Length: 130
Image (cartoon, rainbow, N blue to C red; front, top):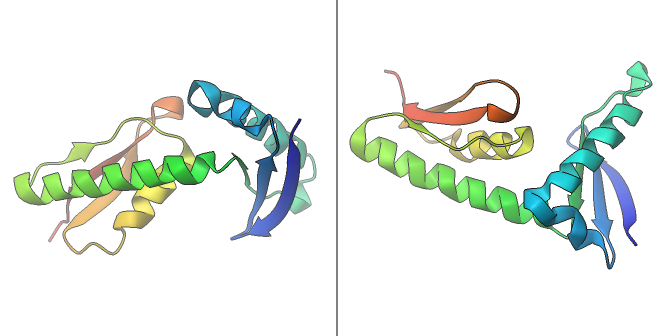
């Protein structure tokens, strides 16, 4: 039993899923939510004229998860500044990578890049090139 409210924000279709069973979509590290998001994105992509990225969230899961990854990125940036060595974060989905990149984009001492392919793609944080 889940209800979806949809909106367009930042050029993306954002779906907020609520209801008594919304938490079930966040089990197994959010894999059911990811699978549902892929299905909705595939359906939304049927019309190439209106193709937009799709982001689904259930019971605030994405916000909590992104906060964790932003904190990991900030902690890794502190290590990079101290050791002057690159740090690789764990593999994460594209929206979590985006949150990590955006959290450090204005930091004058470090830069970020994505590395890898598919589900193994991760954020690398390194000292800023001079």
